Image 1 (cartoon, rainbow, N blue to C red):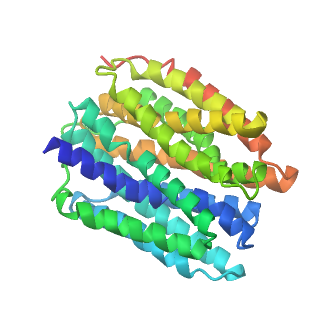
Image 2: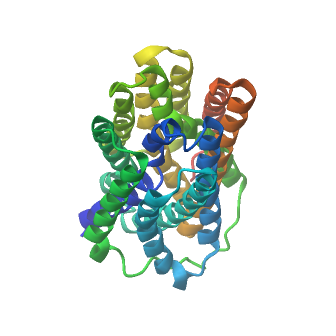
Length: 377
């Protein structure tokens, strides 16, 4: 039964995150080459997705318990349907705004699904470290899947509209496969104690914001950076599935650690790894920089998510959905800031280097901040 929960959660996050949100990354080079977007518009497109994710996280944190199951199913099915609707976006000025609206809606859907699935996992698998880790590999599996599909699409020279449709159909099949295994209800929010945002929670939120700024730029623009260095080559498509594979490897390493008593120490080191990966993408030319970036950033970001949620659960054990939602809001704020930095960077300097450097510095600051957090007694 517990394995079924973990596997169902993994597929759910494949759909909502790995496809519903991250399919945009391998699609971006296609849309740029087809003239559907310029680089600044691509940054704003990503920002609209992250704004939806932010508002979705805020809304789900405040939602009444009786309405949560509707949001879980709406988040999952909405992620697949929005991908299919993206097939019909016209290639004109209006199409940019339609795309922004769809990406915004996809952000709301993915936030609903991720927060509720995470709450379910944290409650049902609280003492099952390995199964909980399996549940959180979904985004990595989805990223790797979307990356492999992107290689196939490039080989057959398909257009972005066709690609969106295939991504959507894969998502719909995934939802249909797990539909009967999703929970009938979600854990009730405890009223034993009033939720209080302590100094430790504030520190966790600030750290998570900096983490999101750090990861989101390579996660969103890795395919674009690869295409710039290897134009017209299938090699450019290899880095995105490698990013997803790195997520799975990172989670596998985490799963092998049976008892992590001080997750903040792990997080400090992993934030540094993320920062090095961003710097590699920025300053190391050729395949080496992109390879290190994909391995380091991909291998760290879902590990960070699980350890941050573990810390949040330790700090607020009676308010799992609330602390999950609040941390997700912080992450969404950072993700929203990241593409805006990219848009400003490309608008003023015609390069993403200043934005990427800022993201790397934020990761190192996050490492210093999290290292000051004392263990919960």
